Image (cartoon, rainbow, N blue to C red; front, side, top):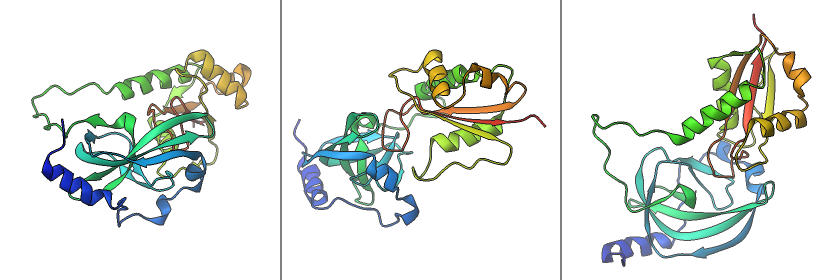
Length: 246
C-alpha cells in the first residue's frame, strides 16, 4: 500500500533532517558504546509507519541515547543503517525515525519496531498481557541464584543489580558499597543455561568452591533480556550483588 499524500509530505519534510532532540544532555553520551560498533552501511529509505514501546532511541553511532521508548507512539522511517558489534561479532539494523510532530527522533533497532501505527490503549478492564521478557529474566535470575547455595534473595541487592545491567550510560561503572561483592557475567551463548552461567562464573574467577563461601550471604541478580546491542550489555548478560548477613 502506497503512503498517503499527507504522509509523503510529512515524510519528505522530515527526511531532510535527522532530528536530534534539543534536550540531549552531555551526560548521556557514551564513548564506550560508540566505539563498540562499526558502521557497515547507511542509506535513506522510504517512509513507513511503525510503533513501539520497547528499546531506546540513539544517535547514528549509538554514542548518545536520547531516551527509552516507554510510550507506544507512531514513528515514520526515513533512513536505515547496519552496525557491527565488535565484541559479539554480530550485526544489527537500525531505522532512523521521527514522530509526526517532529519533536522526537533517533535510531531504533528494527527488532523493536512493529509495522503500522500505534494501537489504541486497552481499557482498564482488559486483561493485562504477559511480559515475556520479564518472565524470561526471572528464569535466568533464578538459575544464577541456584548456583550460590545457601544464599538469601534480597530485593535491595536485586535493584542494585538491575541498575547495573540496565545503565543509562554504558561508561558508568556500577557502585559497589563497602563490604559487598559485585560480579559481572558476560553471556556467550544464544540461550543461557545453568551450565553456561556456571562457566561464566568460573571465567569471572568464581568456581564452585568459591561460590560455596557465600553461604548465608544476601544476593541480588538481574539479567539482560533485550535483544538490542549498544548498551554495553547483551542478551543473557548478568549482574550479581552479594552482601554478608548482618
